[in-house]
Length: 530
Ligand code: G4P
Image (cartoon, rainbow, N blue to C red):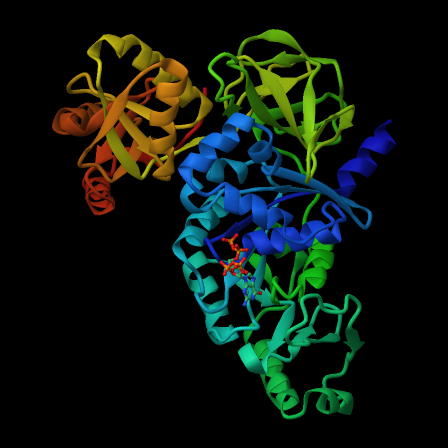
């Protein structure tokens, strides 16, 4: 059994794609799934993306259940690897979930549009990867279009994302002059054929010596530029070091065009070889390693059923150690109760199916009636284990909730508490007054919350703007300093849904000023669940 477990762990690759909207995440996901044989038809992922855009569609889809749940985790087999691709919702759907998904992955794939360079959403998501030292592979997309000089993009990544770039492929021209890429990793030239939706899969010409005259024959004058570029790179960039990549201080960089399926197979081949299998995870009171016999894992996302008649929820659960088998009995650590995991679901690219067994790195869906919260640990071990690192993230958008019918105050409080538990929204009670201030990482969370309050709790609520633009949880070992801070900042203090003290600031600028003024106070950007 131990042998089988070790083999399954070694084969697992669990990752998320991080990108700014429109960089090509959906297109690349689709191509990866096609290679994995998980979908047969180009366009299937695209169609799903189109239908998950607007809020009205969100509601309709959530009611149908399944579709959005299914697209959250996609498992496919590629070569000898079982790949779990977790969707990091973007666009208007950007929310705390987007961040939290990254707590369940072992690596990330960063997609950058080479015309746009590093964009804000990528910076935010990369910050979460940096926090957790998640190894990142970079794909620079849309080389079939004019864009920035590749060296300029690398400089931007190093500068804005604070990670050293090591190109493992290099583009030859761009836009109309795009001739292909040189695969530095394998010493092969891949030629691009414009206007071809699918490039030949095994189109690499082996050219290990760059002085090979075949290069001039195939590329003409572009061969000279390629040699110059690679010479420059050899002098400027450090060589690829797998350990540095695993420590998240280097990112290997690939170039291509997702829509043309160019450079995608090379990317996937290198990705499965380089990206780490599940490793040990931080937990209290000790780290947990995947090859431990006892089963364990944690919940990183909870999705509720829109139908008010069925208050069941699906908890997305990342397996961290041991083997899952259907019907197994596990301990719900927070509640100190035994539960039976009878109805777990594994997410395939097209549909979900009941799972009989699953392994570290896999994500299973567990149905429950509101008993599972984000960050909950389940294990078969007798010891009291609890995984860390599935926090709340400091919100950046705020609204005050106004109740249309004051008689529904109790239902409002209950609804907000449950939605906060689910991680759909953050709820703050200011020290001064009786208001509820809602905090979100993405503004769609507000619309979803008001819609769900009405549908599930019969509460009609509207929003008012509030003059806040940043938040931090605060603590200090120095009690006097904390008391002084509290006395001077009464108007900006609030308790969150779990009664932790938070500081709501007018703007990020004001926040950094306050942080400078009170060096004895610690301002936390994240807060662990308890
Ligand atoms: P996202 O999920 O990151 O938001 O990006 P998505 O894949 O939807 O891609 C955004 C747009 O960029 C799409 O165009 C897509 O076709 C295009 N795109 C993706 N990869 C490439 C590429 O390698 N080269 C070029 N030239 N374009 C690319 P759209 O006009 O928004 O949609 P559609 O009408 O093409 O479907």
